[in-house]
Length: 416
Ligand code: HAM
Image (cartoon, rainbow, N blue to C red; front, side, top):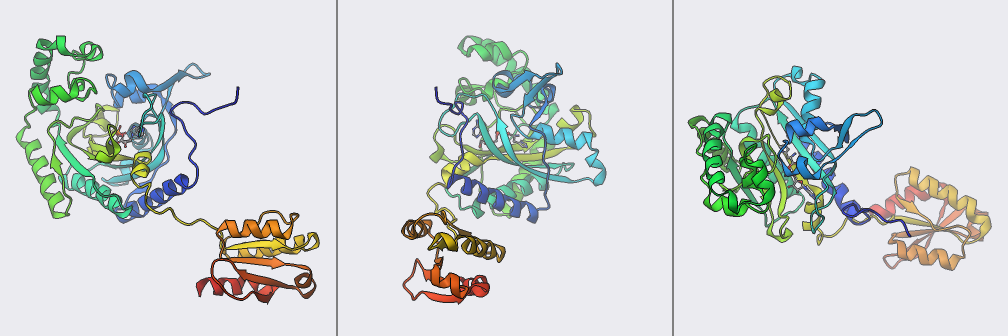
């Protein structure tokens, strides 16, 4: 049987790979504007990290983690998301000592054993941002604004920013009881996994793919304490100042356990059922609960695969070489190879097929390559130490140029 990739895992080929790279480059530029620095966290961590942070009763931890016992008998997991690793690094590396605000970004692949469907993969790429050590609504507004500016920069249109507040531990204590009573009374209508988890974490039922939509309509709503109310109102006011359109969605609960106060998602109906391009929120208690200092935080992660699906129809960047080097005879091969090296060293992209092939075949490849010029070395050029520069895209005369001058003349021609 022929070898094949696993279901939910895929090869990223050109032009998609170029689109991914351009989205990542745009993100790096935006992060620099907002003072974020890159962290590269491990792909595999102790399983316990995700159980304690993402949450024991979440779908991610209960059903979707690639977890296994390694050769040393340790229970480990391949990261399903980036936030727990960043928080672990923040605590383990003492990063809180460099001042109150730590602003990190990461770009990396995450792994979740979900049922694959359009826009849902088992390995996918996230661009994530975490701002640790800042409790103020200015941080919420700044991070959401940064996200929206990034989406604008890459040309995404037609999506909506949805916002909610999940309150603090105090707001949730009372709500937990009210919700639990409601869920117990209506247990017969719940799906089997929810029946099993409501006693441990009633909030998860609100996010359940099966029960969530109906509960969002009927279940009692959380009421915020005055401090959380003020935080939420201020966040919305600041978003208005930065020109970020958004709508409040009281049914937005997010599927991870660590959130407090502000949560948000960017959605696009063009994606179908997997409509979230980005999700995030505040997690004020997570760092402390993981053994670190009291460091309130806020962040988000953008699904690059879904973003790329939405931008697929935009013209892909042109990666054609500028020049294509051709040797008209076997003897000219070594000189042509030397020229190819010199042109690339001068910063001009150049390619070739094989100097052992016929002139006709090499010229066919040159035409197909999308290059602007063919650089041809034939018998005459070899003897005279020159090269024939032939325009491929536009009409024009072939020019004979001394070999040492070819890279600089080519640069000039490309500018002109
Ligand atoms: P999340 O909502 O689980 O949040 O994931 C963020 C984004 O990753 C989603 O909106 C989606 O675009 C993408 N995504 C998730 N699962 C898949 C999948 N199976 N296939 C393709 N794309 C997917 C988090 O991961 C949090 N760590 C976000 C965060 C950071 N909150 C605070 N800081």
